[in-house]
Length: 292
Image (cartoon, rainbow, N blue to C red; front, side, top):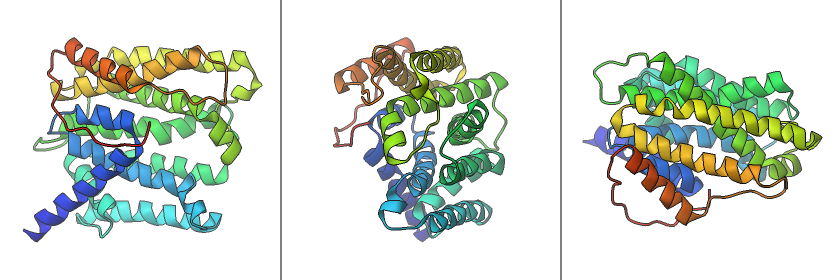
């Protein structure tokens, strides 16, 4: 009973992270089937905590740069240890470790993620090569972790996803990340001194980035019907939300404006995704969340 209660508490703790941080991903995750929903929340919670170590929360607490690196290293080490032993005193790590053990999330997925987080402590300016390396670790492998969940949650033993789904997950993750880079450019450059895309070089560079995003979104969309049925509406909704952000980015050249999707538009996108995939939206109680 104690172990079950602890596992449930860890799952609740992980779910609270996505509720606090993202309306967009929170909405999409709510549309996942019950088989996979808690696991995706567990993945999100760990990557969000790691991101906070390098993106300001630790610095705001007065943690110096070298110590931020130590905290990140300790989180990575605890993640591997928890997966090996099946327990962590850190509730978010415990939740993630349970998901990793059940769904076959391995070091090959986790190590690149922490490497990219470490890059944020060491490198502020990126060329195309370092951008691609960073995006693979910070976003594409997160998509691959979620794909492991989609394919393997509830199964007797993990199996490798179809290569087409692997490609779709990577390209969707890359599109999400580049969209966030564009919409967060003012904050990244002003507060953190980071430039991931080189869009300060002018409109041509910005259009190149948006063209790449459009191509990634199109490629990812083609693989959504290949997903398990209880994942399609959620992924289609997330895709639709970020496609809407990309469209809004096409319409503005102001790098200081953080574009958003209004809540009524988010609702329409979710309904369209449900209709397209012939699935009823689950009823849910409204909650207060920070804007995405």
